[in-house]
Image (cartoon, rainbow, N blue to C red; front, side, top):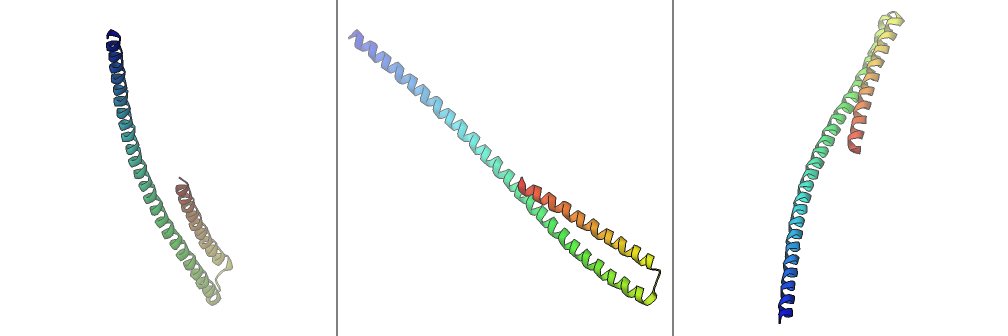
Length: 127
């Protein structure tokens, strides 16, 4: 009988230890689940901000591209006007060439700005 009581006491202690371990496991799983949910929210927030940033860059790039195209058209028209003026007035050829070179330089500047914006967009997409 004493042996049976001793075994019963040991079984009860083991059962209590198992219950304590189960409680610890539940607490740990709850904590990890909470951390995972928090990380998910943060990741979703970062992804949303990234998408908004990419959308804004694409919009700015589109506007820059349109401006670049408009500038190219304007420069082409200005060049045609200069050629017509040259034919009518026959100014000094060097002056006309300088003006054309200046317009060409402005076009190159616009193209370089477009390239920079395109590079920023590409980098943002890679992130």
